[in-house]
Length: 305
Image 1 (cartoon, rainbow, N blue to C red):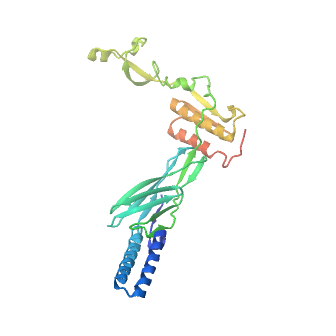
Image 2 (image 1 turned 180 degrees about the vertical axis):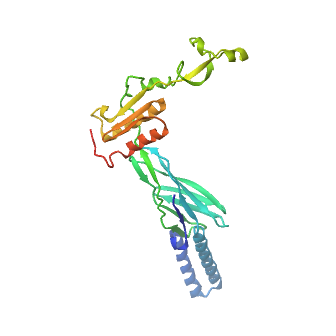
Image 3 (image 1 turned 90 degrees about the vertical axis):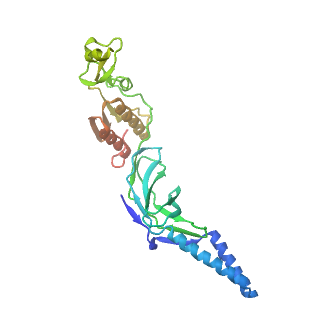
């Protein structure tokens, strides 16, 4: 997490195109007032100059002393938008109106009440796997009448988003002889295994010893006991079993798809890569470890066929 407070030295302000036209009108009005010694023209000139100066102060104060703070980004798959949370804080007693938050091609208009914090998610496109750094962030404003444009120095968050490969189903799921992955989707709960998994309504074919007789006595309904599948089904997700016709990125995308499918199936799986093997396991920690290895593969290891 990193933060940034916008002081007066971090602010820049210049007239907009409308502001330059406004200044040109003031110059013309000044020439008319001097040449014809017209008191009404002088009065209008002073009023318009005062409006311009007040607008400049308001534009500057609308952005000064705002605070920016970045937060860690969650990993995404290639093709999804990377989300970088940025918190914008107004600790003053005055509201802030029409403040633009800009990062790369991302623009969002917001406003802040006194003592308000607002979190905005920067949506940045992902074009390749690996780490994606957050774009520099800046604030700007045209408030109140658009004759001055105020903007800040760029705040560079130190956050990065890990982009996993895009999952692609190009090759059939490997079958290591125990259970095929797709078959396990409907077989995560079996009868007669060791671990208790809950109750279900009795169905024809259920074994007599699996009927929960106390429930029959209480509710006069047949209920069967379910057991969790404790089979040692496992699958090896290997780089070397993929067709040689697949390129590096297609292989990584296919392995990514297999990792997702194996995790959804509840299988224990191993990821075998050139110069790296992640041993058999399952669960979210193992899942993200495998996806991380796929996302960062090739940064330190040579390519392999």
